[in-house]
Length: 130
Image 1 (tube, rainbow, N blue to C red):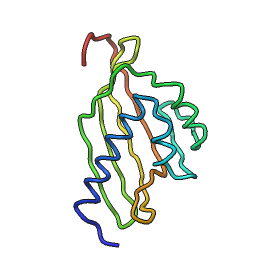
Image 2: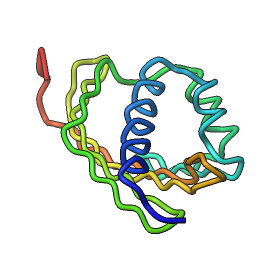
Image 3: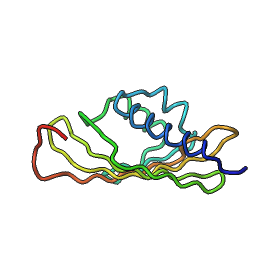
Image 4: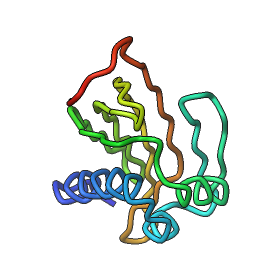
């Protein structure tokens, strides 16, 4: 199957929805868009399968705000890597930067997230806004 400009648009939209769903604790969005064998490596190094990820998502985010600053999509046939960077603020007002890579697989005409890895760095100070 050939890669189209619309593939990149779809993946960018999925990436935005992934972040919005995290912030809203939208378990149903993830249930629909994650592959059954999805794995996530959290910023603390822990490994979550889909069931664990959904359970953690339902608890709500530890973030008060998250803003994307960069997104790069690379497509290799039926596999795509979405690299992102964002600024976050935790509920305790500490701030930091997050980088992540999500891997998607084309399943029929849809893209399913099969893997995610997140790295966060905290700023040493508290800030009132991002």
